[in-house]
Length: 119
Image 1 (spheres, rainbow, N blue to C red):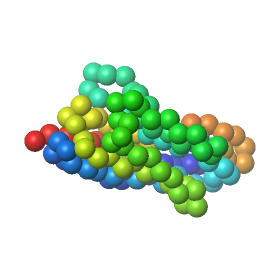
Image 2: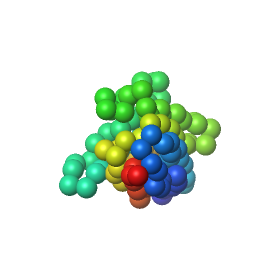
Image 3: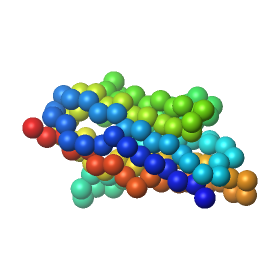
């Protein structure tokens, strides 16, 4: 059993910053990829940023230069530093990881962290 535990969402004014954290816990054999998705009201879930064990990183164009993804492989954690936040960044942010146990590999999801950018 694998669980992704998130923290760090909240309310912030435009131009402000937030840092999301996510730790994978449980019977983990290997973590291949971790990242963040978001879903705004009335919109589809979209990839914000991901980081692969190869070192490859994907970042959504609209957040480039403002958001930074980082990982701590020792603790199976991923972080999303969000700077210069805009109202259009308001969404529920979901941690995602492709994780292998001893028997199988699959995508796991956190429960979601609400980020609200408003004055």
